[in-house]
Length: 118
Image 1 (cartoon, rainbow, N blue to C red):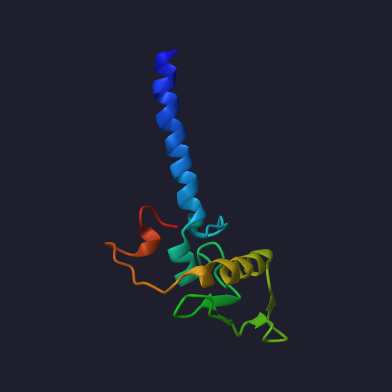
Image 2 (cartoon, one colour):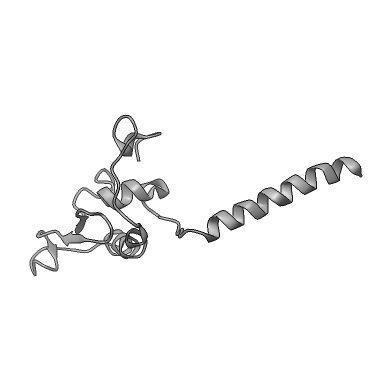
């Protein structure tokens, strides 16, 4: 009985600490780029999975984006938007403006290769 109490108290404190850390910031699960907001907000969709995305993020990466000219819209004869184009842009417009500022990558190598390619 005493042994279970020794584990229950630190575990409950850990859960409370985790909940308070999440409540101080904004978090929404991203369906792209392995849930990595830095890579998603600076690079958009992975071009290996969608080689011709209909939108791209533009600096300062806090919600600004551009529509690609080969898609409809803006080109009435362009390719139609895919479900991924629409959902990823909606997530971009929701998540990326929550950043206070646009920072630079400070790690070694490219951000989309850390820890694995995503």
